[in-house]
Image (cartoon, rainbow, N blue to C red; front, side):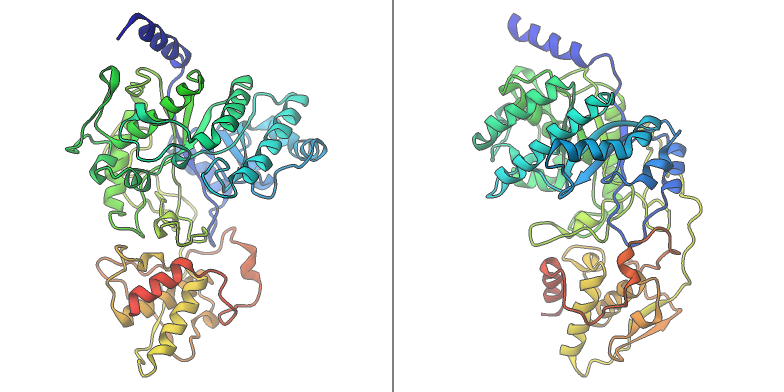
Length: 484
């Protein structure tokens, strides 16, 4: 390494050496049974989590975090971006008191989209978010809340395809001008670059060995890069791809924060609680070691675990794996799915169990066994899966090998539990009945819902078993796979 390169490395390390990397948590809200904010705050404090990212800015949630000293990253969803300065000022004013009593570090504009993604609509998405981003930051600054930075999200599809080494990484040519404009905004506001990393999909896209995704460094794949950099796991490989891409646009001074990283526990081959536990067991101590990455040695890395609990109402389609609903560390009953030391010390322990959650009665809605009209059964299963989460029936998932009758039972039960065991929700044209005998198998858990907390309002309407389907994509793929 020559003197110029050495000097550049020293400058970059100096920019980030004075802080420690943190382990944060994403708390998604796409579920019928929403955990109460007070329960979540208590759980975060018990587990030592001091940084939380939530995809909302609801006042009741922000009030729950008041006085907790937890740093928050909050969000404005798509469609909520301000279209002018007056709207941005009005929104900030409406939340001003909550900003003053909470440590709100970042405000993500346009959560639910990656506006720089390659595709026909990326320019429109970017323009909407870019305007909203500037309006919000100006409104924050005007009112003296400039300690909060406005930001937007990124993912690996912004990079050129077919990368094998991080040093090859660069942003796609089609977005470079806009990316440079955005990065200047980050620099001017001392804000980090936010990126979501998906170890399974991102590495598959680059045709890399799946075992390379795990940060236990046991993969046979070892990637050697320029300047003596060596990569033995996918996390640091992914991270440095973005570090290189930033450097090539002359923004190596900008910190990279990983706003979502983890491992799914169901809905995909290789998605399991065991593999999730293995992933975190080595990832989190790597973060707390503050060793940095081969490209930025000694520069601490901040990560937000994705996520606190599953999100069975997350919208998925033919492009999104069913596993996207199963990234939670906790089940809806407050029990952790696997051992993980959230302090990052690598202890072989379970995280704290959530307090104050009660399950509904031990009863399930199951298939009657009447297979005289198989078309009728298939139709009822499709209806049930259109309103309940059947992604555990997907190929390679935990309930993918149940057989005809058990599959119907699983579909009927998830609909029944989604509707909080309302007996009318176990009416599938005389093909079902309610039982207190647990139909679960060794591999497949038939869930029981928990007592209502802060669930979605949409269930206050009349039960709609026979209304037209509002989602099809993965549901139809699952159903066809099961029955054909």
